[in-house]
Length: 632
Image (cartoon, rainbow, N blue to C red; front, top):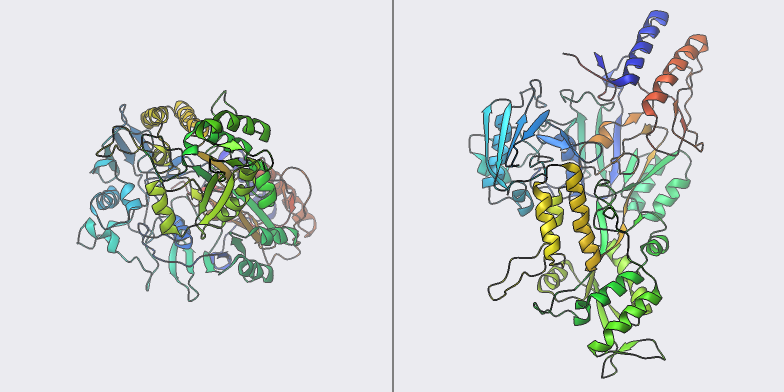
């Protein structure tokens, strides 16, 4: 065994000392490992990783399949089935090295043929959903010079790793002699055996309640989990899931509503986490130029009007009054889940806000557009004394958008606008956005990790047959400066330079005030502290535990040890930094062993960034990727 890092080497020394002095050694008994039961507000649909579209299935498949490259614990590209990769100077050719020893869960070796099969299928199967086909849209060819090497040749150079997070499936299971064009038709259902995957867990079966059972994959290259398996259990509402957690029916729940989360935080024996999601909630103002007339209110084409609206919106007040202080006030279109890209570019700051400044801006613009302010009511009226009305639309199925849109009416009225709140079903809202028939719409959406994909909806659309200039993109912007920055970042291989260009691009959107980011919603989670001590948040100390881009949150779960003679277990909250202390009441031998383990655990867990001190007995004896790896 090879122990990792200074703490690992110290742990190895403690183990040797314990064996020598007391005849004790850590050992893992797979039959006694716990199963982590998680309540989710979803039911599992398709288990095909290229057609699955529900949160439960996506969670399970993230644990079961890896890409050639996967996301690391800071949401950056890291090793997956390939241990390393290289990119040509021009950014067109990416070469991945699959080391010997990577295995599928059925014991078959992972080879380059699996990646060639998967990418070829993504490139040729026209029946796949558009989002899946887009994963390989920039791939010109894929080939395998040998069993351990995969070469992707791109159509256009890119700095983004073109293989990160794209699940690779086993050709010996999926191929079936019928060729890659059947990828979309593969049911991928567990029958007598679990699904064949490469991740730390495999899907073992569907539950009668609509959930999924997973079991640990002992052949996972990253090491063994401390869990025997994971059960994903569906609940109709947050209240139902919280009731199950409170009663002990599940160990962990994710996606709690704010009131249930608040109650969980007050409940003894329950630990909670509010993690930064990859979502944003934003108001989109129809600032389409006069070269492309739409059915939207033309006053929003004036930059001064949009800036006034943006300036009077106070995201801090929104989070405090509507979302009980849970989550983060909005800034740019990059959520804190991507720490290297979020926030303003260097040297820039937010716009000057406040009602007085906003009113001054409107007074400089609206009279020229035919509006006058009624001094008695402070409303803006047109020549016919009709109030200046802005429609605020949202999808009723989007609860965060609905709450934010209702709040947004207040700042608009402060400015003297009439706000017409207009809920639109999904299809109607999409049609209104596509045709430009909106004034303002509010929506929540997930920001993808690939900056190329995240920036694309802001780009100018292709010119129409009778148009001489670009049209706004999906998110209502058409700015040549933005497009130039988005183009430059695509091929910039220097991470620092690229991050700077991406921040500048989002700064351009912020300045245009066509997107006003209101809120970064959190992932609200809770678990039974008597059963599980900790989980890994991604990004560290700030992100969620479930719903990550990779498997870290659940793979690195640390359960409490049970059935220890003379041991005591009890979580205690103490202000300050994090320490993990083992308390054993087992005489002098146990006391000395405990002191040794305390040193190991304090070093290993220092700086994880929580505000809780937990006193508990933890099962740290199990083989795990975070502790040691096989030297074979």
